[in-house]
Amino acid sequence: MTDIEIARNTKLKKIVDIAQKLGIQEDDIEQYGKYKAKISDEVFKKVERNENGKLILVTAISPTPLGEGKTTISISIADGLRKIGKNAVLALREPSLGPVFGIKGGATGGGKVQVAPMEDINLHFTGDIHAITAANNLLSAIIDNHIYFGNNLKFEKIVWKRCMDLNDRQLREIETGLSGESKIVPRMDKFDISVASEIMAIVCLSEDIEDLKERLGNILIGYNRDGEPLYCKDLKAQGAMAVLLKDAIKPNLVQTLEHTPAIIHGGPFANIAHGCNSIRATKLALKLGDYVVSEAGFGADLGAEKFLDIKCRKTGLKPDAVVLVATMKAIKYHGGIEKEKIFEENIEGLEKGIDNLYRHIDNLKNKFGLNVIVAINHYIQDSENEIEFLKEKLKEKGVSLSLVEGWAKGGDGAKDIATKLVKLVEEIENLNYMYELEDDIKTKIEKVSTKIYGAEGVEYSEKALAEIKKIEELGYGEMPICIAKTQYSFSDDPKNLECKDTYKITVRDVEVKAGAGFIVVLAGKIMTMPGLPKVPAAENIDIDKNGNIVGIF
Image 1 (spheres, rainbow, N blue to C red):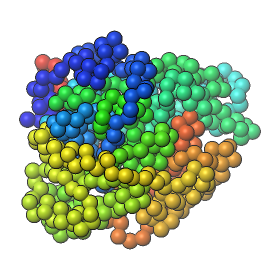
Image 2: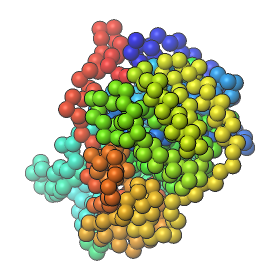
Image 3: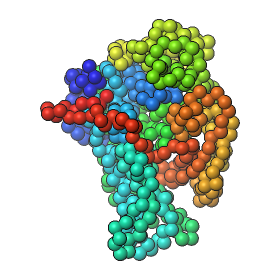
Image 4: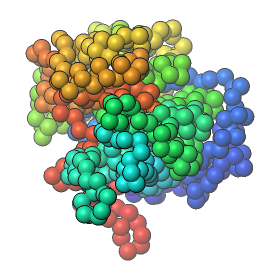
C-alpha cells in the first residue's frame, strides 16, 4: 500500500481524546473537524509550572534530493518511546506546499509512521501558512499604496518582498505596477516562498501576541531618500497583520497513526531560513511530555546549527540528545556514487562517503558538545553487509548506532533507539555555541563556515560587504546569523558532494531581519524562491470521483 492508503486505512482517535492524553480539556482546544485542533493560550498558563521534559533533536547527514527521513525517524522515535511506556510528544514543522507539489510529494512521514490526517497536514492544514502569506502581502500592498498616495515617508529603496507558498522561479524577480494608471509607480520586486518569509520566522520565534506585534512593527521594509531605515510600524501595519496571524500563532494538535500526540507548528526551510518549528510549540510540548521529539531541517550543518545557535540561544533550551539520521543511499551519494545506483550494495561507496557522516558527528559531539546517536533509516534495499560495515565503523568512533525500522514496523521498529535514548538523555553535556553575539558579522560567518562547513575561509561580494557595513551601522551587528546555502554539500556548491578539496564559502548578499531578530547570509547560488523539478510531484497528485486524494506520499 502507498503511504496515503496506509493512513486512510488507519482509524484515528478524535482529537479530543488525543488532547486528553496530554491533560488538555475539550474547552482548551479549538477543533478543526474531528482530527485537528488549535491549542488555546489558556493551556500555556495552566502548564507553566510543570517541569520540562527531555528534548530530543532529530537532524541528519547531508541529504539526497528526496531526503533521508528525519520526519519518519522522529515519528518512529516518539511512537517507540510510547511503546516502551514513556510519555512522548512530537513537536514538528508544518509542510510547505512548495515541496509537496515539487519534489517530495508530501512531508508527514511514511509507511506505518505518519502524522495524520496526512492529506490535510500536507495541504492547507489549519491555514497557518496562508495566514503568513496574507500578512506578508498585506504589508507589500500597504507599502505600494503609501507610495501611490504621495509617499510621505519618502521611500527610495524597498527591501520587503512579496511571497507565495509554491515553487515558482518565474517570480524571483519581477516588475510591478505596469497598468499605466496615473500616479502608479512601476518598480522591481521579488517573491520569496512563504516559508522563507520573515513573517514565518516571526511567528516561529514569538512568545505571545504582544511579542508578535512588536516583532512585526520592527520589520525593516526599506530606506528613505536620506538613507534612513523605514519600518513596518512607520506604516502602522503591524496591528492588521497581527489580526491575520491571531490563529496562526496557536500551535496545532494532531496525532500519529499510533495515536501519539503531535504538536505541529511553523515551517521555515533550513536551507533558506532557520529550519525549526515554533518555540511556542516546543516549549508547550516540554511542559506536556516527559520526552519531546523535535527536528531541524536538512543536514546538521543547516537545521541543527540554526536550532542551536538561534533557537536555543533565544529560548535558553538545549537538546538532551541528538539523533543523527543517516541512510545507506545518502552515504553512497556523498561518496560520489551516481544517484541511479545508490540503492545497490556498494561497500566501497560507503567507505568513500562515510566522511560526510563523520563530519556531522564531529560537529555535533565535539564542537557543540552534545550527546549523539546515529539512526539508520532502514530501507529494504540495505544489505546485511552494509549494515555490519557501518556498525563497525561507528563502533571505532565510539558512537552508538540504532537500526530504525519504523516505516515497516511502526513504533515496534524503534524500540531499540527509544531505549538507548532514555539512557542517553541522562548523560551530562554542555551546549557550545559556534560564535558569540558580540562577534562582528564577518567573524560569525567565518566561524560557522570554518568550524561547521569545514571551509578554509569566506569570500564576500562588494554588495555583501556594503550590506554588512550598513547593518552594523544600524545597530544590528549583535544578532545571530542564519546562513542560506545548499543542503546537498558542506560547501556552497550543490555539486561538490564529497568536499575532498579545499573550498571557500562565497557570500553574495546579506539581509537583516530585524523583526525576526537574525541576519540572513546568502551563500553560493541559493534561491529564496525555489523552482519546480522537470517532472514535479504535482503531475501525480489528483482526486478521484469519490473525493479521495491520490499521489501524496
